[in-house]
Length: 509
Image 1 (spheres, rainbow, N blue to C red):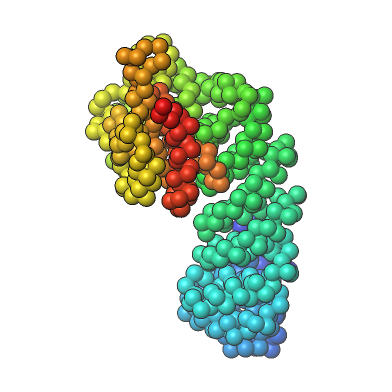
Image 2: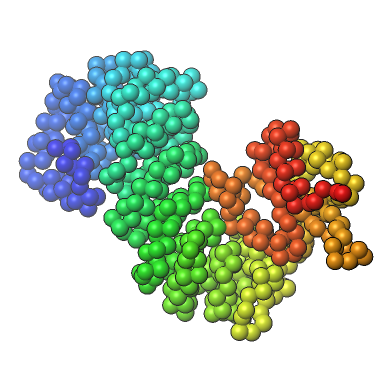
């Protein structure tokens, strides 16, 4: 009975409960249940309690409280299955004196019996009950127990283990790696909700696994026609939240957009713009067609977009280096930016940075618009660059690499256009070969971006860094990047920078 009840909707449960309450025999059944609870087997008590929870019987009612007290009295007699059912009940119940007392008792029993538990599902159910506040010692016991059962993990077990760890705020990379590997091995046929649940649980525990994300991305891309457009957009958005560029899926979805751009809803459009611009991705051979398809849909929704939606769309397109006239001119001609800049909320700083990016794109990329337009100075306010702390390791490596080059000047911690922070600028004065008196300066901008500035698992720059690199080139700089990971070993970093710098600067004759 309880399994079928579990599948009911909330409305169905309420109707079922109402019919039961109105049935003439219900009072007699209730009295029998309250009278016979003391003679029932622990498993029957647990199942009966779960059935009442599923039906929606008020948790503070006499019958539910009676069954809770019965569980307390016979808790030591509960076997593994009964404990698992009881844990499932308590996980869904509100805090009361009886519920809290039973939870405490159940935790003690579980800790004592942990070595004897054989069922993975029962173990996971009990883990959820133990909650976020368990002691470090108990967490270590759970990890050891989980590892002892890893060969038993089925695909559902592996999926459920990750969501269980998220619910407990419990991070164990080795255990997550085991579950991730098991999931990747058998992705085919996994439904949308289960895949999404796994990804959201990984994000909640701050776990990123390149093989898992790549596996899910490739699987969804290879079956893209099976999924609804809404499901694919949700996948793309979730991948973006990991900073992961799902190239195969983004390419496949871009082809579908180009084939039929009118199917995108406004919400889908804004999400797609955010994902593709944040991850600095556009189809390799169809960039213009793809961006024109998005712009076609944007033009359709333009009259009904809010000021903030319009601004977000223009910001994303600016990151991609695409500047359609209609939305940008509408953004700049009205009072949209003034209204947005007056917002006093927790996102104001982020908003100011986005406005600054649009301003720099219009000034440096010089898009062709039907009339001259720019971001009003009053909106920009006081422009300041996001200065990073001095990178002493990079400074030492650069001085070491350039120490023998008297013809090269080094400046550290430079701000360009009062916006872009550079870790260093290397300048080399070169004599033009056509004239001994004509000199030109070659400038290199050395950057050490944070790992979050790149797509996860790659050195592909994300949107904000891509714009910075694009603008530095326009301003006459040759960008040279070195990652924080490459700087870990100064000897290796010196070799990397020597190669990157001196392939561009000719050796002195």
